Image (cartoon, rainbow, N blue to C red; front, side, top):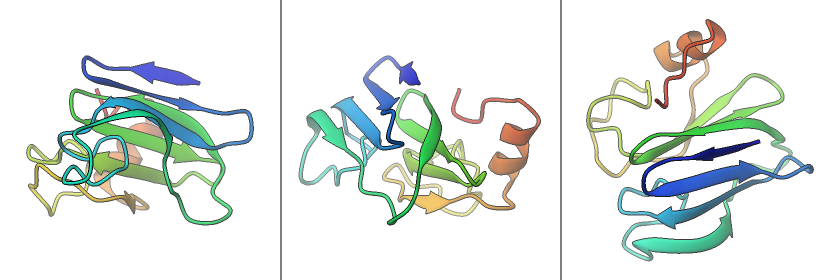
Length: 114
């Protein structure tokens, strides 16, 4: 699986690893924006045992779905586009969205990262 946005892209390997490339001004590539405003192809550090099945990117954020139905969100959440509903930050963090509005939207077939 692969998703390409206007400033960055993300893809999932056959082994379930998540990789990103491109602009990282809000941490959407899974790296601290204070460390790198842009990254080459980089594997995102996820909890041990996470197997990513799908990914979607937006202008400044990335959403990844694992094989157990958990969505991980990273990047810009200034308009609550990550579905977390509590950060309003332009430098989001990586968190699972279990039970959140974003997770429910994804299950309905909507794309919360668009």
